[in-house]
Structure formats: structure tokens, C-alpha cells
Length: 299
Image (cartoon, rainbow, N blue to C red; front, side, top):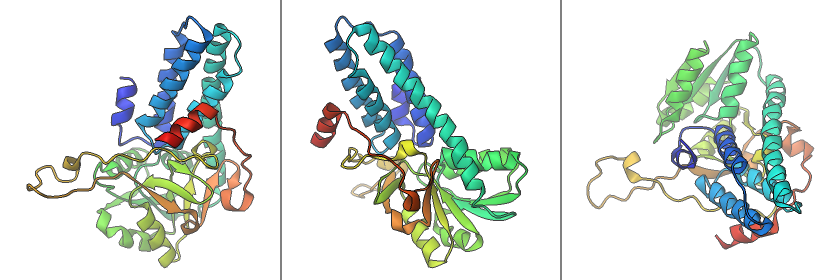
């Protein structure tokens, strides 16, 4: 287990992936003893860029790396570089854990009693909210679809059923039937900016269906999913076509992409730990490490 399993992971939510990645990096830096400040900073930069490229559509990985590099740049000794880097990662983990609880409290206000909810793919934040609401005694049921090709919707259904939440699974092509039955939809995001969110491919169809059927659809996202202005993450590489069609005939062209961008205007709102993003706009401008910005611009 290590960074390689992060790259191969097409099931976990962004919050779970960044948590594991941060802990791997924390352990690695604890053993780091660079011979000079320059070499230590070079390691952090190149390791950070490697981490971003493990899952290039996930903003939390960028924000984790950016925070570490900005903090490390203040170091004037090798020991301080190591200490500041470790502190930046520990602070990041602490903040994201607290943010989840705040999103839970705000999301609870959106969900009416005995609601029928629809969710898509498997957002770890949405799953956390649903499990915690069940523990609090809230009564609701959940509808979701397979989410091909990895079918993480089935994994989400298993988790919800283990939590005692009534759950109904639809095939992806029956999404419109599920939306018609629901009171509102909740989805996650791997990244979002002032104009769009990035999430599992198919989310845009869900957002369009929700608008057509006058169903509220909320995107739940902690602030670490937010990309600073001007930052564009590396383009997603296409994935193994055998995931879609294991024994495709020769000459068949198969497109296997996991993510897509959804205009924010298609959501009822984006809910963060600070409230509704469209209406509050409370995010302060985030500084970006100059070296990191230059590298991402070149990709």
C-alpha cells in the first residue's frame, strides 16, 4: 500500500484519497533528512507535483501540496523545513475533519423529514452526511444508480444498507426515473471554482434532469475542493477501455473518462462548511506557490 494504490483507486471519494495521500506523505517526510535546504525543497516540490498527478482532477491534492510548499518556503534551516512541512500536513488533516462536521450540520437543514434522496457515484462526503443523519435518528431513503464503469454506486448502496438506510439501486439509464421519485439530489465534487464543478461523468446529466423536473440538487464540497483563480489542473488521461467492454471487437473505439465539468448554474447551490457558495462567496483569495503554478501551466 502506498502512493501506487492512490493512482489506481477509482472507487474512493476525493476526501478519502487526500486523507490517505496526506498520511503517506506525512510518514515519508518524517523519515526525510535532506543534506541541504535546497535539496529538501527540491524533494517537496517534485514529490508534490507527483502527488497532484496521481489523481489530476482532484483539487484537494493540489491544495494539500500548495499549502506544504507555501509553508516550507518560509523555512531557513533543514530542520525547520521538515517541521513546517509536517505541521502543514497535520493542519490540513485537522481542518478537513472539522469541515465535514460543519457541512453535516448545514446539510441537515436542507433535507425535509422522511425525504427520498438521490445521489450519484460515491461521494465520501455525501456518504458521511447520510450515515451521520441516520445515527441522529433522521428517517429517509436513498436512490442511486450503478455509476459505470467502476460501479461505485453499488459500493455506496452496500454501505448505506449496512447503515440501516433504505436504498434502491437503478441502472444508469434509468436515472430519470430515480430523479422523478426523489425530493432532492445530493452529489459531491472533486473540485470546484467560481464557474464549474468537477465530478463523476454523468453528473451533468443528473443536474440537467433535476432542473427539467424542478428537483433541487445540491453539490456538497468542503473548501479544500475549491481551486484558486487561474489554476487549471492537469487534463485527465483516458482510462483502460477494457473497463467498459472487456472483449470489444477489433476496431471498436471506446472512450473511458471518469470526470466531467458541470456549470455551477446547473446546481441549486454548492454547500460548503461556510454556507451556500453562490450566495456567500466567502472564500478569500488563496496564494499559490510560484514554482507550482509554473509547473501546472506547462502541463
